[in-house]
Length: 105
Image (cartoon, rainbow, N blue to C red; front, side):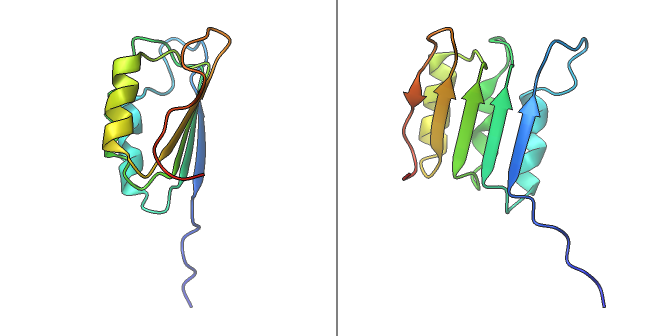
């Protein structure tokens, strides 16, 4: 009997200071092919990343940014593109604190 593939429901991606970077926001578009992915944590990514590239991740219910210095216009695009997703952001920079809307808690 064949075993079912594991259900990946949470992914945490750390950007870190690697050169070249080990992961990019743009590269995370491949996560759209994980239909059961519900939560994505993004940590330590620079402000020059295209955060709007995450708009294809319609299956998400939670999207967390920690020390990810995106810009408000990208986040507005995400909020409109992912209305069922609860988007949270927290940094020491005062970027966008707290919940940005979308989904229900």
